[in-house]
Amino acid sequence: MEKLYSQQESKIERERILLKIKKIDADTDFYQIISDAETFAWKLEEQITDAKLQLVRINCKKVVENRVRCHSNSPLSDTGTSEQPCDQNLLCRYKRRCL
Image 1: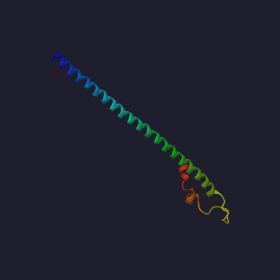
Image 2: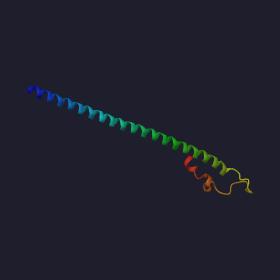
Image 3: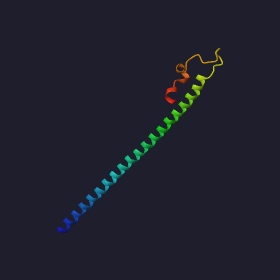
Image 4: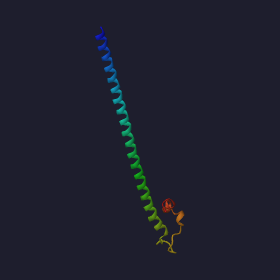
């Protein structure tokens, strides 16, 4: 009887240990998923930041080009200068942001 009890106790102990191992594996998998998701989110944030910087560079290039247009002599004007002040000219609307 004692041997049977010992075997049953041993079996229960093994099952308990196996359950602990499964729980640890599940927790490890869960934390790995979270870690992978965080890494993915950081990479996305970097790509978004890079894209925003590229947009700023593009807009600044447009502003510089447009500013040159604003301040250049107009071939249609009799006086040879732009009739609208640069701040009112739609081509220069981004001037303050980039320059």
